Image (cartoon, rainbow, N blue to C red):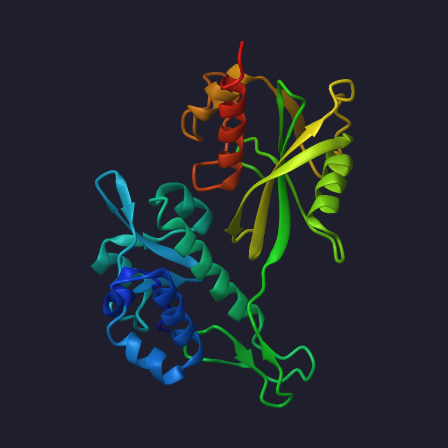
Length: 305
């Protein structure tokens, strides 16, 4: 049986050629695509698409680079036929985000998150009746109840903890071998970002946050569609003994500046040693944890000696 290939409308400059091109006009254009089915159908005739199969995006390898082909149409063809004709492969998104250009990774993450949301919201939670999506895929409607469902993101705090001269990095059993990252956790219902941050640090490593500051945010599609809210947190110099929650973490430890600098030079392919063990390495540039670690390094290296 022919496999069904899902195409995601590409929100890129090719869609905006009619406007030469202010931010406001672009945003209004995108909003019109989401709200007006007729306008969206018209735009689809000249737009370009990314291909997904079972939530995995299609990549082409050209030399040492991995590219996302922008196609003008998508059909119900066998997976092997598409991979052969386009000389590429459908790749798990976790791997794809590590190898594509930084500018493409947010589009891939958003596209998969939207496809995943549609896959899990095909029925109304009140009536059990099928829901119908609009042309743009920006919402689903249950015509039996009149309820309109919109895609949502779950807020997650990701926190780089420091004691002033060291930063705390952790790993879970599911991580690639050798990879460490900042602490993270979902915000509980009714909880503020500040409360979630302090609670997660206390729960997972047994430390009490004295102060913190916001850094940035990022959409992240794992394990579902998440809004990563990135912060730096400071703990007291006399209260730095880690009490790790082994149900959540495999390891948590302090890293000095030199060890962090060395870890930033490695990736998953260069961390393995001859004896089979792995040196520490950190998430790639596409992940907001990488930004937090780099910011901490810049803060340490800019201090007067």
